[in-house]
Image (cartoon, rainbow, N blue to C red; front, side):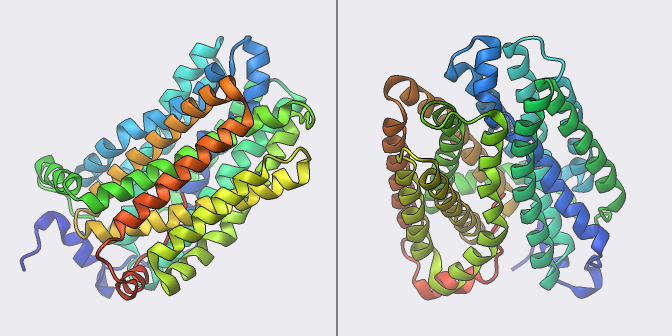
Length: 420
């Protein structure tokens, strides 16, 4: 079968003569892209009780500092993915990192909650320029064994960045003004962007799509695939539970009987570091047992972890959040693999659509869980989040229909789970 010219990069990347040499600086650059991006995305979560008092706002209003960012990511992810097929990979990644840096620094200038929400939205506009493009860059430039190593560095960067953004924000506001948190994170992003520009190798295997019409055709094909739509819905549910939990657990733990400070709330996110270990292990489990059993394992961990947070002492709550977040990492890894497996072709477009649904789920999770929190408190939030997790499991079963466990494990070995 003839290979269309705009997909030749997938073929080129499989030949050793065109493979970009894997260097330590290149791997560090890939890790920095993940770190710098996720420094910013959720950094306001441990600050929400403080921002509520400072701006005399409701929980729902301050939660918009989270959901506005994820909504912007959802809006722009498919568009950026298609543009990158024309412009190139590094030419999108590096400017996006500098744009994210500027938007982060501008958050520190906000004179009102509404202004802060606007700048948080602007931050989200730049995130897909990194997240939606770096996957394609890695697969094109480091084929074979190199792609697994490079992707593991990237995933590690996303986990560390997600933790440090929240942790540093919580610690900084305990000693200085809340604006200092955005200044510090913005400066860290700037350093990372400069290093990525210098260290990330120039793309050798990128082949420009002749025009955007071909990318749009891939999108239309994916949207007619019921199994792929079920996988997108699974991604929606995954981030719904993650953002809903880690946004409103801050209000829950800031109240009696816990009464945690911003610094202590930031420290809760140490559970995120489990992702450095859980993500590779989830890949091995997926290899051995397939997608359906992996989805069932992740649901069990998510549901049991959420139920543990109903305790009125801190230790079981932290254990519950650790188990819950580990289940989310497994679920996200499995859904990412499943997206690539089902799509088969035009995988960048499929990844963009998945990311759009994924982050729409985050926005919905922040909003709907907020309404539930205001109306009925934390137990009702847990009921909502467990229900969404059940929906995610049902969608996972639909996504895997017609695929035997043997085929599942075979194709899974060709992919690397991504918990970004």
